[in-house]
Length: 226
Length: 371
Image 1 (tube, rainbow over the protein chains, first blue to last red):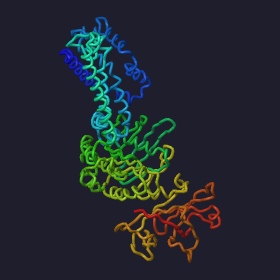
Image 2 (cartoon, helix red, strand yellow):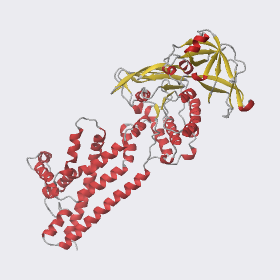
Image 3 (cartoon, helix red, strand yellow):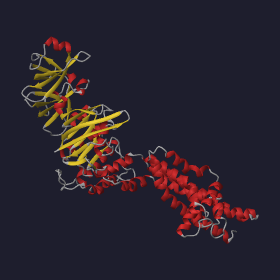
Image 4 (cartoon, chains in turn blue, yellow):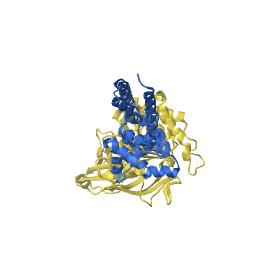
């Protein structure tokens, strides 16, 4: 049976993943739109930067975030200037780290959906009198449903499995920054295999169900497409 | 009441440099080979392409492009029918129509605007009836045939209450059957809507059937413009140089059920013309397309010929012989203003001693009926 602290860790993890996905959809939409449509010569630089978390060891991301959030880092100085507490070892800090860590998992599906829509439907809408924002909200968003679903679920599931970044910048404070993956690690360290099984199994099943949702729904959406 | 434009733009190797002025009513066909810049011209008029500075576009007194003015696409009162219907797949047919309806207010579609002669905006029910969409309003666009989709797209463009309707080869992506299905709708639309139309096409039969005016394009420039019959009748236009040269003449229907499955028509001058029986409706007059290569000339009225249609005409001018040893003869039908082109060999021209002003008989081997 799980400890009470495990339930708390599960709750923190779900909250972290949800807030991260929401933040990523807000940040990722304009970024992906820009990447899909820009003809800027150096666009590849931004694309490579967005994809970095795919290949970098999470500890590297975590390390640099920790340095940045420290008293001498840019983020640390910014929070100091704002007069709020430093982000390191806080839940807000975890959200920031997760946003960076899961960025490509949200931006890339959105970018490819946006590219797939092409210019034609937007040109049609423009000749029918739709302003740019109107075109985005009434044409691009509805036509990108499957891309948004993929982006949201991938971003959510990827954040669920976060370990290295959280360990570096979140520490392991039960009830505040202790997430599921770290709780599992702790159980294994203390040879509490039964509890570790319980948590690991839940994560496994949850992740699988989420992916099943994506693939199942995407097939349905494909049939609706022309 | 005119549509005036002077625009230039370059995209890679291609340069568009078009100046024209066409009447602000009726259908103007924009005709030319593929790659001649027809679509680019239309896209520039709509504001989908940005021309080089110094251009000007005005539609019946409203400036869309000029000094310090560049009205964005969504504020130009333009209806655009693309080659691909481009229906929004996430909306039903009715949803697609309403999308246009909801947004037409935003671009000042009002009777107060100078130059607006259309008066009332088209009502959705009228447009639905005009294009025969009653039966599939609730359907998903994906379930429609190509012709049906294009009809919805045309209706949608009309509902945005345009001051100018641009149609970019709306039939080119359709099979022959769908084309035949949609043409009667276009006839009705152009006869009733009263909106000026620029209709891009490279199909002579569409041009001959639908257009009142013609704008000929080649390599990004406007080569000739004017009333349809006048431009078609020119012996020096790029169209005249091709094998496709043709003329259009107008006839009244005298007798639907003539002898031997024929219908009897009468030219403006009262000459009889026989055509295969006309089935379409109760119309009084009809357009005929006559290919220049189907017209042969005789210096005297032929006797005992199997060819039914022989018209008297006067030679107006002759083109210089081309490389294949052929010449184009421009003729004016006797006692009327209608022009007819005949393509004959240079040798015949010399043998018959054809010169301008000569009176002559034209034997017409084949006639295409256009409603």
